[in-house]
Amino acid sequence: MDIKLLKKINVEVITSDVPAKLAGEYIHQVITAHDGDVVCLLSGGSALDIVPYITQADKHECRTIFMMGDERGSRDPEINNSLQLIHRHPDSTVAKNLILTVPNEGEKLKNFTSRISETSSTEISKLKNIKIIQVLGVGLDGHTAGIFPLPKDQFAQIYNQPELDIVPVYLEGLKIDSRASFTPSWILTKADELIVYAVGIAKKPILESLVSESMEIHERPAELLKQHPRTKLYTDQALEPHKPL
Image 1 (cartoon, helix red, strand yellow):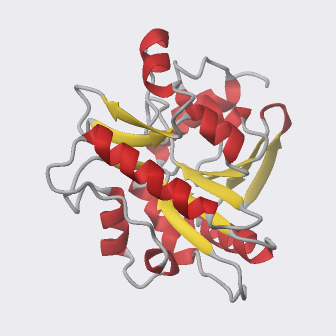
Image 2 (image 1 turned 90 degrees about the vertical axis):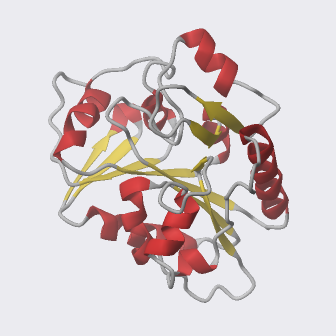
C-alpha cells in the first residue's frame, strides 16, 4: 500500500491492490470513532464494491444512516443505485440501514428529487452531533456524484440553486439521462469528509490530470475533491503527475 498526501490540493491518495477493502474499513472506523450520529452518502457503479466492508459496531444510542449521494431516476433494478446495492449486498449493514431512493410509478424527475430531498432533510434533522461522509466516484470525463461537465451558464442553471440541496439533472445524450444529485455547494459545505473511489487502468489518465492541473468545476466537476478540506482517494493505480503540483 502506498499513501501520498497531496498537500496543495487537500487530497490523501491511498494506492492499494485492495482499495475497496481499505475504503470500507476506513468508513467503518470513522463511524465507530465518531461520538454521535453518522450519515454516509454512497456512490453507485464500482463504488458499490466498498459496501461489504462497511460494518457497524454497537454504538449504543447513536445512529448511522446510509443513502445514495446521487441517484438515477429509474425504477429498473439494474439502473437505480439503491436497488443495485440491495441486490448485490442484501445482507450488508448498509442495506439494512439504507434510505431507499426509488421513483414511484410514473413519478416525474422533479417530484422524485423533491421527495428524496425532503426525506433526507427529515431524517438528518432527527440526528444528533452529525458527521456526514460522502463517497464519490470519478468518471472518465471528470464527472462525479451526478455532476457533469457543462458550459458555465448551463452548469449554473442546473447545479447552482441555493434553495435546493438535491437538484434534478436531465441531460439528453447520456446513457442514463435522469439523475438526482446533491449540489456542489452542499458537498463542499455540508459533507465533513469525502471518500473517492476510482479504480482500473481506464481511470488513470483522469486521476493523473486531476492531481496535475486545475480546471473550473463546470469544466471538470471532480475538482470538488481537491477543493474539499478533507478528501481521501482510494485507487489501484500508481499516479504520476505530468507536472509539479
